[in-house]
Structures are given as C-alpha cells and as structure tokens.
Length: 418
Image 1: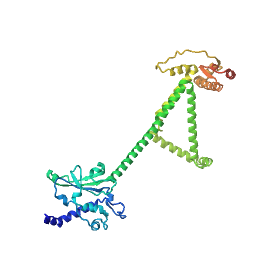
Image 2 (image 1 turned 60 degrees about the horizontal axis):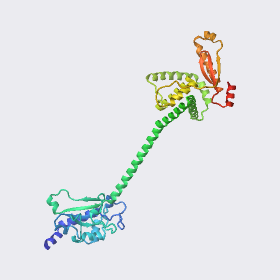
Image 3 (image 1 turned 120 degrees about the horizontal axis):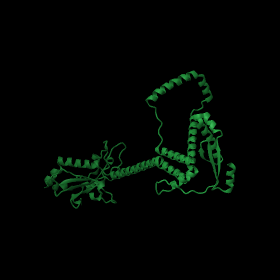
Image 4 (image 1 turned 120 degrees about the vertical axis):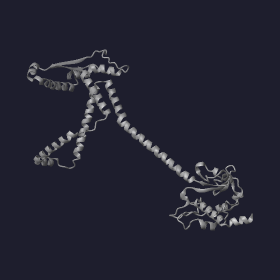
C-alpha cells in the first residue's frame, strides 16, 4: 500500500541501498575519460580498471521488487557532488544527464533481454552502436556478475545481474596476444636462421666442398695432387697472416733494442728458462692443455685429399685411368682393374746412379737416404720440364713425357724439354 511504500522509501535501508547502488555505478563509471569527463593528473579513476558498467538488470519471476531496483533520483548535481570523488584520491567522474535519467526512470521502460529472462537498463548512450542488452556484446567483450550461491526458489524469485563492457580490455589483450605471436614468430625465425647458418657452416658447406673435390678427383684422379698443393698453399698463407698479425700486435716496440736487451740479460734469461722448464715439466705430468681438435668434416676432407694424392702418386698416370673409370661407374662397388688400354705416344727417359754398388758398400744403411735425395732432384727437374717420373727401380729412374692428346706445336716443345 501507499503508506508502506512511503515508509520504505524514507527508511534507512533504502538510503543505504541507494548509496551502495550509486557507489557501485560511479566506481565503474563508463563516462570517465570521455569528452567533458577528464580525470585530474595524478588521480586514479574507473578508467584504469578497463571495465565499464554496461547493463543493470534483474532476473526471476517476482513482480514487486523491480519497482524499487533503480535509485530514482533526478537531482544530477547532488548525485555527482556526492559520489564523483572530487576530493578523493580515486576520482570517479560525473554521470551524464542521460545516465541519471536512465537510473531514475520507471521500471516499465526497462528493456527485456536474453529471451525475456532478464530485464534492466543500459548506461550505453552511443546512438551509433545501439547496445541495449548483454547479447549485443560478444562473449569476450562482456563480463557478467550475478550471485551464484542461491537456492532454486531464490533463483526463481529475484536475482541481480550486472554486465560490464570490457572491450577496452579485450582490445588491449588482443594487442598483447598479437605482440606475443609476432615475438614468437621472430624468435622462431631467428632461431631457425641461426640453426641453419650453423648447419650450413658446420655440415652442408664442408660436405658440398668435399663433393666438389671428389668430383674433380673422379674426373681426373691426378687432380688430387693439385688439390693437395692448393690446400697446402692456403694453410701457409693463413699461417703467414697469423704471424704478421702477431708482429703487428707487438705495437711500436723496437725489436732490435729488445734483442740487445735480452743479450745483456743472457744469464738471467738462462735462469728463467731453466726455471720455466722445471715448471713446465711438472705441469706436463699432470696433463697439458690440448689444442682443440678439428671438426670431423675437416679431418674427412683432408683424408680424402691425402688418399687421392697417394693413389695418384703410387699408380701414376696409367693407374689414374683405372681409378677414374672405377669411380665413374656407380653401378656396383666391385673394383675392376681390367680396364681396356689404349695406345699412347710418349718420350721415355732412363737414367741410373753411377757406381751405385760402390756407394752402397760405403754408405751401408744410409744408402736409402742417398737414393731419396737423388730421386728428389730427378723428380723435381722432370716435373719442372712438364714430364712425369714413372718408376724407380733401385738406382734407376724411368721418366715419361706424354705426347698423345697434345697439338703438334706442344709436342715439339715437350720433345725439346725432354
């Protein structure tokens, strides 16, 4: 009746309900940060929570309580002055006139949502978006708050439901997820490129280099010696470069003065050297620090070059044909030494060591050193004149200048050099 309604509206319970209702709405004020609702510098505000009050509603089948759900206070200035927190550390901003009127309107003007299972009002006033019910927002754009510890009768009677607009939070979360995805893609790409670079440097490039050299040896087994000479030349160039760099790091020291100073300190130097030998001997017993071993691919590459050089050196040009034909045939792994021969025109030279018997009696076990020195001289001279040492037979040497396969002019020059 009218007297009971007037008593409730003027009661302390109603005043507490209205104050708590407005405090809740202002704490989640959706107008903070918009035009005309600027937050003072250094103050916290509902804008920091990334959640804005969107929908205020009731569910259930009861008909009486909804009439008193909204606070019904049209005094905008009084409401804003009491709850905007102008003198507080947490500034809650003002509610717009539209929002005050919405919270003061008759319940009959409220909106039915969720297939008429929920009825309430919205604080959204943007005519372009036309958001009136919770289902107008996507699932990830809303946050729903309602009591969960209710009995069946209480649930069917009346329950409050507040829906918050968290689109700002969703956008920020989407930005963070996008940034995370891009970072992971960059990390995976960088890791893949780093792994690919290491794989290329340590595995693929050495294997390709070995295959290239094997192809050269397969096409011409005598190329193995040329490849060995090239590798040896590269090693010497690198060693010389390291020596020059070591000399440069010495700075502007005068080497001559350093040598003279060390000559004067010869006695001290001898003492220090003896002392260092003793210390080195002690450490050598405990185990010396070994130099890092080369990569397996490097060892394999050098082994291939050495094996090819030994085959070319041991079998010569005639044997190179056998090696080449067997390496080109990839049908089986069996060695076929019966390769058909062919006619070759060449100039043969034969020389031996004079008085070799007497030299053997005099030199005894040193005769092989003597033969090897002479062989080095003979081989070097023949090689300088584009010939090929073919065979060593004790004190004799068989030398060959091949003419087949060359034009007549080059054959004449080879004959002259022979």
